[in-house]
Length: 270
Image (cartoon, rainbow, N blue to C red; front, side, top):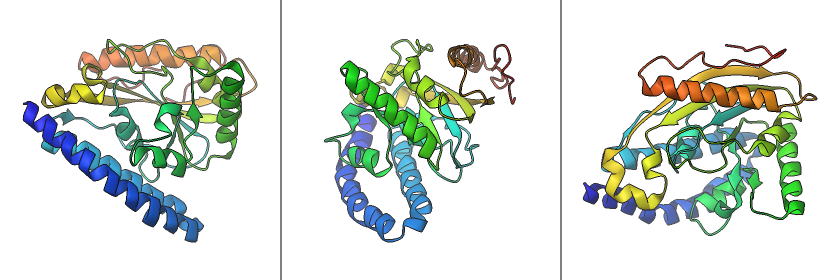
């Protein structure tokens, strides 16, 4: 029913400015005063926000949400790859980390003017990309991704399609961002697929369709990237092939795990 969608979005829109104020003062001040407690505090806050948003959509809006497994240990050298179907992918990918949080590669348009979200991008130091930028800005973006790959002490998450799918299928990857991350270090790469969200890709779609959401997700497994000096494109294509197969299995009610097959000399962890 539309009334449930209006009510859920209304609660979120009313709450976000107040949550933004709390984040800018209490959370940010705590992290500044006690930097040794940064990760526990920021984990508590972002996981609380994840629970609040998903709770509004499910308990108030009536959406049926199957959140991904919380299987990822927080720490450096961990990369999370997920397909991109809707704005709900953000809290879903946050929930994959069981004792921390990911730094999410985020489009520049979220950097300003959105209550709670824009300040969160800066507070959590999300790598920011702008696929429509001039060539010199794109190069700067790739340098920023490379620096994040080396320096981040928590996992990094990326949606390699770069934009939300229009038909629910795995879209073409925008490979430069993922390649820039892979070029800098060895990674344990965790791969997830989600489904059932693409018909409500934008917030305006949620009002009438929230109660009809029946989302599902799966952890396909983890694979090791051990050759940062080599060409990453075969590795990236293998990840995409695995996600296509995993999505097909998820929709068919089959076990989607173990669908990752790596090319040539690179071996899979699962």
